[in-house]
Image 1 (tube, helix red, strand yellow):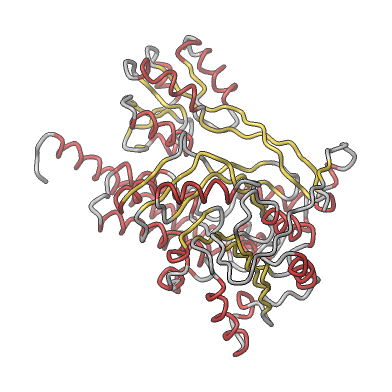
Image 2 (cartoon, one colour):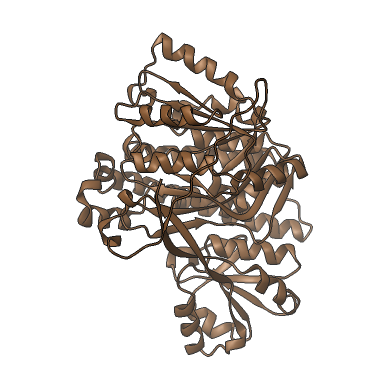
Length: 497
């Protein structure tokens, strides 16, 4: 299969620079510009290594009213007025040069302004037939590598089971997904693919691959349960048999329009074995189907991190795990992946089984490893299940449910600090209202053939009421966060409250 190499760039934490500057930062007043996810990653790394962060700075007025990671958030004007002697670390995606110029205009010396992120080059592998028209005629490089073909001897139990479910996935994406597994440098795996009753040519493509490679097992169901919400007796029996096909010590899940980097299994397996991990996860790049632009790289940590026990894992969820509340992009111990309690999705979560499963798996694990490598590539398609099976208002309700459950978990484990409450708040309010409205408006205006009923609902008046409700909840959360911060101050002074 031919694939086009499409160059892209993204930003990540500049680990080498932060390590180099640690000693000097530990002696200075430090402000982080950007009360967002990258700011949080920089904050975590520096505070864990002895540097004291005084505050955050952010231009968003709604953020200036409260705290972030337990620290006050100040305005740009206040930064220029009161913090001229401070070192400012810029941690805002895509705007480092612009912000640097602004700070210098405010009188900050060049040496006291540090770009905490660095630009990283990456290559997306896109099937030629999936390239949007804007990329046509650009003379992109073509790679055509035949995947390895492996047949195990009878009775062999591979180390890893790779699991995918598909339904009418476009051929170009489906072939890329399957071949990204077959091209893995780690070859001791079996590949279990469940066809949810596809009505296009997907089943034929899967049979073609299964005939060539003995590691592939295809289970075909008669209908897509996620659309019909009904299962025949035969499909129910086949679903029950599927769980006996997870023969590996570890399991990973791949969406049928995403793909793995070639060393995904190698890297995650090595770390799982080294640390006895229940889950190993890493960074994932999300790119937009309509123009191949990178939406985001779900932030990778500055270095590989290992978390032991429930309290450390909860801290990880607050610091990083919100980005990884999905089934994909991880290697699980099979016993953790298949735990029936993780699949008992509450009614409030609807078809968000993967979000519920991921949080349950994290919180029932003993050891989780967070790897500092980009290992997974995700295609954001506006006709995928995320955008077609979930009404927009339901998405808001599910985000509220997740947020409440995370707050309760913090309370149950005596970890409801201002820092942790602040860290999970954006799950509902910044990321969790479901969609990037500006982006969807642009899709509606420039690519009308991608507009689904769900997208129209998001852009309608109906969802505005949900946002007003969310705003009221946000105000209540802000009061709770202020009370938690005050409680911490009083406790630090030795006052019981």
